[in-house]
Length: 377
Image 1 (tube, rainbow, N blue to C red):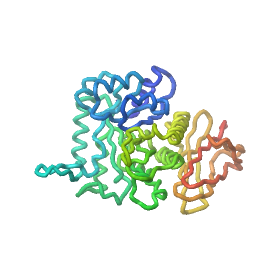
Image 2 (cartoon, rainbow, N blue to C red):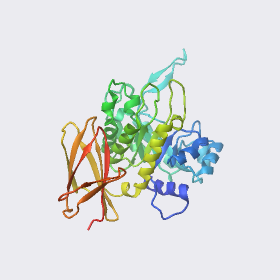
Image 3 (cartoon, one colour):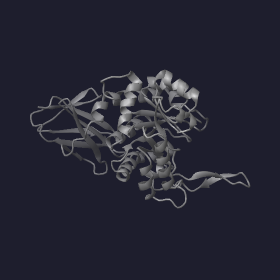
Image 4 (cartoon, rainbow, N blue to C red):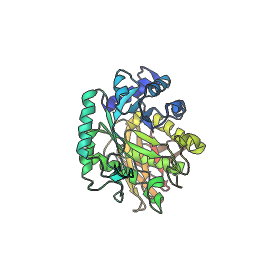
């Protein structure tokens, strides 16, 4: 099973055999299976990681609610190679970060080098030899995007990622600009999310599927992204080529909460609506990108606007987002649309005029807009 086939598995796990298009993978990281019904209700369709698992009971609980999982390839998992609940295997998290080591004399825990990239590739081939039918997920740390990150470990460098990326069929990374960056102005760094995706895409080529992680909780400090910032990070991810989203929903401080998203009504509501919107657009998002069909000019050079153009059933879609913490006016020009006069702004209950294939719109800081031009000739 390759990463593309994983989409079909998610469809089967969700609704049974169907001709419906597969859903977009929206996963939750390392959660207890007892909460799978609540995550399913919030629009999640995949678990990634199981604490000290997979265990027999964890797999039974997930199977009951039709929640597939990507998990470690332990003895229990390998004994269930025929179980469709398991849709992929995974490496240990963030091998590019400095790894914990214990001094055998004092018992003190410290940090040593990262796991060598060649070892990750070796482990990938070992897992493939035991089960070639499932994709293998590799999730990397914030060093993919954050060049100031001190947690890579001694002797590591950006060049290591070219080799790391050979160790997964699905390659993901996590950077949490608001909750995780030690900066006084983290709101100015949401663009680290697409920066990391662009870097991974360059290192990966077309050999792997590109996914990434999204913040939505306080994690281990006092800062938490707002629902609008989470939405911005998601749409920057999708526009920059992410084929699957993994939400990190833990809180470690001031108290531990494994499922902090479920305990945050405002954020849970926002994420649920966002997941619903993504699934409604999944057939468009997973379709081929149309190159050289549109251009955009930002009124503020300090706030670029990134976009992707796709089409479905004679409708043209332009997914766009302002890429910095500032406002700007975007002017779009689309070729081949001289006779059409209106553009629908999806999910915003408004239309804007289009003249000779051109239209303009206002972007607030990091604001995404989705445009649909209906009934192309």
